[in-house]
Structures are given as structure tokens and as C-alpha cells.
Amino acid sequence: MSRKLYVPELTVQKSNEQFERRRYGLLEQLAGADLPDIYGGWAIANLSLNRKVAEANIRLQRAALWFENPHPHGRDLRGECDFAAMKLCRAYLEFGQDGGLLDSLTLERIKAFFLNSDFQSMYDSENHHLLFHTSRYLMAHVYGREKFSEYGCDGAKLAEMDRSWLEQFIRFRARRGWGEFDSTCYFGPEWECLTTLYDFAPDVRLKQMAGMMLDVLLTDLLLETLNGMCGGAHGRIYSNHALNYAKDSVYPLMYLYFGNVDPSTLGEDCLVDALLSGYRPNDIIMDIALNRSDTYENRERKHLHNMDDCLPAAPLEGSIRKYTYRTPDYVMGCVQYQDNYPDIPSAIYAHHEQHEWDLTFGTNTMARLFTHHSGIDGNEHGYWTGDLGCKCGSGCGHFFQNRTALIALYDIPPEAPYQMIHAYLPKKYFDEVVEENEYVFIREGLVFAALKLLNGYKWSVGGPWSQMEVFSPGGKNGVVCEVGHADDFGDFVSFRQEIASNPIQFDRNSMTLTYQSRRSGQLMIDVSGNRELDGKPVDLEYASYDSPYMQSDWDSGKIRIGKDSQWLLYDFMEHG
View 1 (cartoon, rainbow, N blue to C red):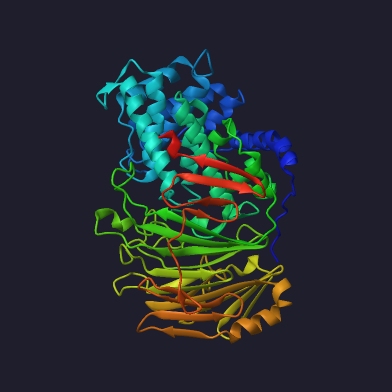
View 2: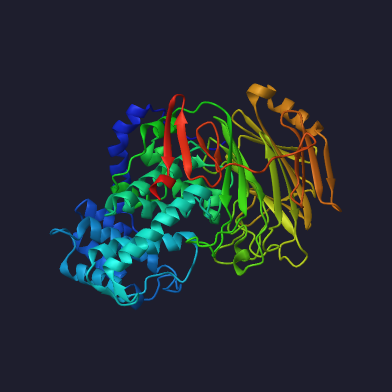
């Protein structure tokens, strides 16, 4: 039996009272960590505590010489130069003015970095564009009368260009969501940029929009969290995030802002920009985070992640529909449907590092269950996340969920390197695992789950995934998963008996799957985009946000967040 999470129960008032203690503890942890610090986060943390000032300056000086030193991991320097730019920007704005803690050499090198370098990343993804334009906008104000040689104009002109770009960028995300949707990895750069704009943007309107988007982003994620763990489906995460919530960038931020996270599990360093920022979530958002005892459905819609519309000048019309079922004891969610990409070069980013579905138990950061198809291995797509190259714009996996039941189809082309699917099923983090009637049944506390791989399964024996993985062969496969609670089923035996008796119809020729759940209805899915519930097509024209706590019509840019009789309205269009 694995150790269970100990999660403090806090009121809004108590959480607010303890915020400074949490913030300082996380800052101490970051400042004391033994980090390579290639961008400068460790240096900023120590400078904020007025510690190791000389060493912090040396590290920032090295970061400012980004293009003159080899990357410590051998990567192309043009890939992450915008990450360095953002940290150098934050360091200057925090400590470089009015006789601050940055020495003359550090100030000189930071200035040379911005005025003489092209610090726009070679990568075109959403977070890179935001990092570049945010850092250039803020530093263009600092050096308003001086020429940025790589961009051919002075700071004042660049600042106006970037201000306009940032307003359009934030407004579009309010209308259609983030392409790197609910990413527990790239949430970090997004948060870094928005908090820095909130703290330092000279333009009042842009500062206000950044603050609004911070509230929207935070609420968007917390609605799917349980004890700090952000469950369900995600865009753009890495394998360590897929296997352990304590490794992602969201987990320590949930602790920082709300406190309802087991502090003993905080293994990753918190984003220094959040620790120094003046941003605090509204008390209504605090109340949502700390006082949700209900069970609810959360429907969302996000625009397709791609490289062609980061401004966006001509956004794609397709979108991702996401569904999450959140209870006080577990969270299950999936990519309910995703439009195919048009025939454009960036279609390779379809399903880019996506985590397509997940069942999260509230007891341990590694107590979770999901199935996955491994695509082409690489630096970004690994064994447990993404299926790069799998049927390009359509992906290999198709998913459909209603409340406690989820079904999936995998249609893998013969040329794909992995002719199988696998499930993350770590035995040691569950109280009980029973195999019978071709199912794997799980009991974790009072929560029960059932998983069936329709081509059968075998456990991994030996190697890193021994007794943590089951795999199922074949290019045409299906999955059934259902979850329940002891309050509904009585005991684990009754749950197993009921689920095993539920009818399943799987046709490999037509690639259709039907599952009859007594609790959640009859679910049908095929690989052509059809989803039916109890014999009727499901309406997949989701709103941007549709839950008891957050609502927004698709493409409206007007978002309501609230609880009971207290509601906030975020109108991003009135700032246009």
C-alpha cells in the first residue's frame, strides 16, 4: 500500500493568511537548490533574498552571453534563447534599476544581449512566440531610444509593435483557448510571461489584460484539479509529467496560490516569476479552489495547436473538444473529439505531445491510469506521450466519455513503428489489483476502476516499467474503462461483477465500439468522428467553457467565473 496524500483543509481566509509563508518556503527551496540555472531562475531567487549576490550576477552574466557558450545539453542555442531573454528581462526589471543588486558588468551584458542579438527562437510554437514578444516589449521600453540592431529599429517602435501583438495574442486566447491546451509543462512559460506583464507592463490596458488572463488560465486548470493534481487530457506534456503530477509546473503553483496540496510531495521547483509577482487570484477563484465538494462535468473547446497562427493572422477553423468528469475522489477526462488538420506543413503537430485521456485518483501523485500509443521516438515524443507521425493530421487514437465510462479506439497504420498500445497501471500505487474476466480491476481507497484492452494484455516484466505497464498488441484495438465509488456500488466485488456483465461490441473491420454502462448509458464510437450516447449523436459543438463555475461561448472573448451568487465577468473584447 502506497503512502496517501495529506491535504490541508483550508478556508479562503486561512489560505490567504498562509500565502506569504508558502511563498517564502518555495523561494527558499528554489534558492537553495543545486541547479544548472542556464536561464537565470536560481540567480533571481537568490537576489530576491539578497543572498549569493556575486554568484547570482555571474550566472546572469553567463546567461547574457547565451550565444557565446555551448548549450549544456548540446542543443541548438537558437532554440531556447527566448527562455534566457525572459529571465534576463525579469532580472533587470526586478534588480537592475535605481541602484539595485545587478552590478555594472551584468547590466552591460544584459543590454548587449537585447540590443545586439536576435533572441527570437528558431521554434514557432505558441510559448516561444509569447516569450519573445513579452521580453522584447518590456526591454524595448527600457532602451526606448536605442536601436535593436537585429530588428532594424529603435526600442520605442518595437515596444508599440509588440504591445499590439501581445494584445491580439491574449484576446485570441480568450476567444478560442490556448493551442498548447492545459499543458502542465508549457503553462510555466505562459505564467512567466503573464505575471511579468502584470507586474511591469507600462501600458495599463495590457497590464489589465494580463491580469485577467492569469485568472482565466488558473481557473481553467483548477477546475480539473484534485489535491493539486490537474487531471484529464492535456496538450504538450512530457513523459515525467504524464507519470507523476509532482513533476509538472502546475502542482507547486496550486500549492502556492491555494495551499490544498500535500507540502511533503513538492519535488519540483516553483516558477520564480510567480513567487515574486504581485498577482493573487480573486477570492471568488480561491473559494472555487477550496470549496468544491460536488461532482460535475466540464466541457471545453480549444483551437488546434499549430505553427501557422501564432499571431494569429489566419487561424485554423478546427478545434479540440475536451471533456472532464470531476468528483471529490477522482478525475477522469479525455479529448472527446478533435478536428482533422488541413493539409499544411504544421499538420505534423496534430496531437503534438498530447495526453489524450487520464483517470486520476486523489490519493497519490502517481496513482493514475491511462492508455497510449507510442509514435516516433524523439526528443519531444517519447514512450509515454504523443504519437508523432501517427496518421499525421488525424492521430491514431479516438476517445469518447460520458460521466464514469470511457471508450477508445486505436487505428494504427502498418508503417507505424509501434504496433501496439499500452497502459500506465502502476500496481504499487494502488491498494488492490484484481485480474478477472479479461479486465484489470483497481481499488484505491473507496474508488474502483476497470480497464479492458480488447486485444488482450500482458504485463511488462523486468525493465523500468515492470509491474507498472500492460501492453496490448495489434494495430486495430479498443479500450473500455469505467470508474466508480463504494458509495454507489457497495463494495469492490459488486463493482467487478457489474462491470464484467456490461455488454461490449467491437468490430475491427468497421472500427466501431459500443459499450453499455448501467450508470453512464450506451456509448458508441467509430474512427470517422461519430459519437453516440444511447443511440443518439452527441452534440460536439462545445462552448469555450461550460461548467458550473466557468462559462464562455465559443469565440466570444467574454468569460464568466463564479460560484453561488458571486460571479466575475472578464470581457477581453471591450479592451479592443
